Length: 403
Image (cartoon, rainbow, N blue to C red; front, side, top):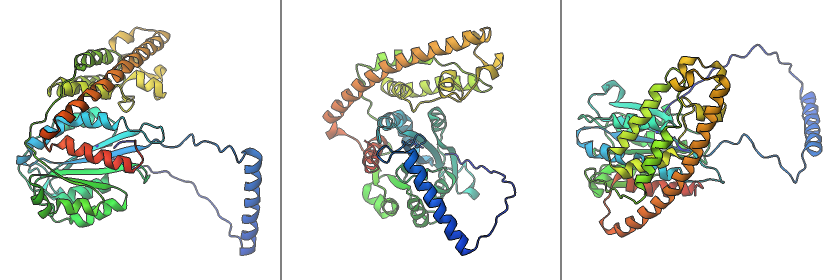
């Protein structure tokens, strides 16, 4: 699974329990009896040659916390991030580990902005680690820049402690931080927070927006080295090169058909449905290739909207139609009987699956076309955010067993 940030905490009250203390001899006897019983149970119920599969085994995760400098000079960086979000997610969604597709979770932070609270280190968590990709897009496109103090150590520390990171060392857990001021600014030591991150198997990739050697001198490479990450430099003001493909128009047409299969529900359902359309428009603002890559992501299993879409929710059995009030449904469904509603949802589910298959087939052709064009343009390739991020993610995902 992949994470851009939320921390969830639960508390369970447990009733009074009394304990009886056993003496050492009784304790030894009890342990022996328990071991004998366990061996007999295993031998009589489960053949040793046929181990029971782990049905509850968690899906692999790819979790990424993206920390962006939003000081005045970083407009180009933010623009690159907006332009390439769906390209990054589309590539990550193709990864497999042990024949499983990963969950992708992304968290988003901004730092170094004078409009933020100085007592909180001029940093702000925009999203916790979440699979809600439209939320990440919404927050990313809302970012604006404003001069400030860039405290890399502070924002790394907050991301390490505040986010709900997977406890599984086999999952890919990354903090990616980009900026252009010295890495050692601020009252929180980057050395300490980077070491704390890697102690939790969270690697840190650093991206300096400027000259490579300057980034080395200002400790950006040191930060990556401390947390088993990779250091890169980019030209934040470079224009992103979009590669149109012969398949973009058809992908966009299919995306329109895909959107018709979404059936919102609940108090926030309609606004979430509208948010989806807004993020389509945001991607389209960077041209057909960007919009086509978003359409490709929407056809993959990582794009799930069970919290507001009836098709996804019914597939996951996370909502009961009987419990939904008439006004919580789309107008077209409000006058339907319960049986008619079920049939309509099943029809939309069938259509969505058909459309997704067509999109994925075209996406494969479009990616092959772009790869060929990228090889032809290799000599002209700019050091842009998406280029260095995909290079790093490919290498680090492979090290964790993602193929």
